[in-house]
Picture 1 (cartoon, one colour):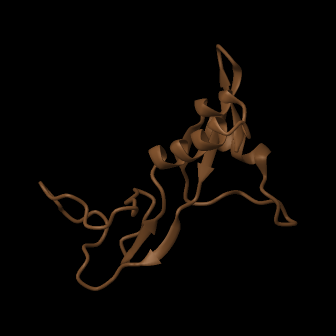
Picture 2 (tube, one colour):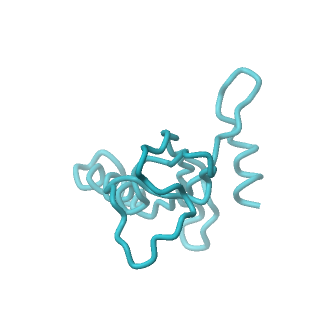
Length: 113
């Protein structure tokens, strides 16, 4: 989570999400393959342009599912209602410092300008 500038609120949360990579099963199409007019076979599996074409697909929640999950915490009073303004961006990886912590300064520079 990093703060994204917003003219109304000053800042709104931006969630940078790295999807889990899993090997594609036999019989499933590889990412980028044509699926004209077909519905996705697996619910809960999100195909992303971040995926490679070597039989790997990204597995994880969609942007709507993440926002709905945050909304449940807002409804219970755990998070402030401003958290609903959450924006989600799927990224290939998070930049880390030399000691393994998430480098928020580098992430802000890379994804916000």
